[in-house]
Image (cartoon, rainbow, N blue to C red):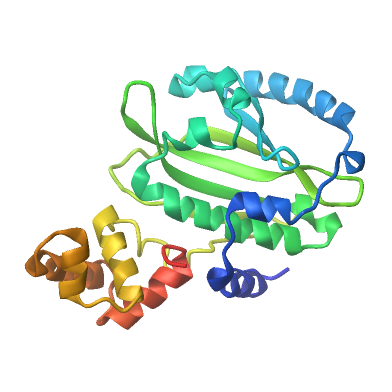
Length: 267
């Protein structure tokens, strides 16, 4: 599948977002369609690989909608308790509470978009792509560090549905004070790279307040209405609006909203 095809698919999905749990539920996995003896074999292999690479490995079970594995290296790199990750009832509670709040919403939106792209592929191609994310997480020293997290389908069900999603997380080599989420899709067969963010740095410097105001603009709110809802002055709202236009390199609010939709900041 070409770069243009991938980009076109992701753009079409902007207005049709689901949560990850809803996306997984649409796979309609059943216990008769999966084989947990395969996972036991994979788990032993992942444990050994994570010890050798020193990266943080984890696996999400789409059938159970939760983490089913987290390597002990989470303790070494981030100070996390790997056992707590695998024993939470719902996917994400332990890890996602530590993701920077300015990164979390875009990260989730990108994961859904790229998940839908992967699930749209023929079964024989679903293991051919790796989604690479860069974002900030808080370690046990209460300091945010940038990480690189690579996600791909590890195992499919008997009928070819994505069942186990594997991730490998490492501390990013570049720890400059730059906010935001980066994402790249890697074709594992030919090495082709593609970014689903058409303007790779357009959203990085936006604050949570600026994103919030952009969402109000998308809904058609005037500055005075935004000010009332956020309990801030109109002057403050207008400053945020000016900063939005400057950071996104656009001349009006319509262009800002369009960029927000394309990048996943808006739905």
